[in-house]
Length: 73
Image (cartoon, rainbow, N blue to C red; front, side, top):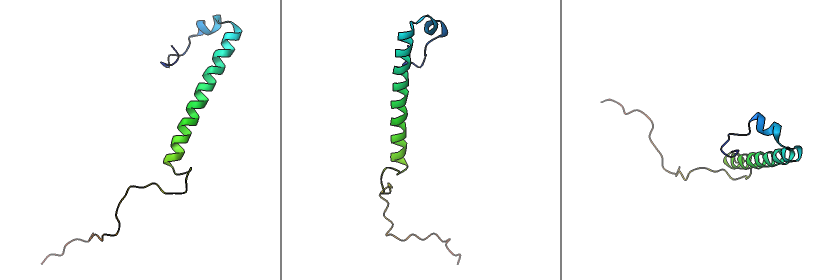
């Protein structure tokens, strides 16, 4: 029910025993904390914050390209 992002409705939470409500809250909190850490880790990897190397595609820049317009004769 929860992992489908349906959550819990008000009546279910209201009728839960306090110990079960606290346990469920802690488990949900742990789940979202780990999920946030994984997202942050993947974003840091994409933004090069975790390493000093620049991640870029293997483009060969040794070739010279002519970007000027051809002249009319």
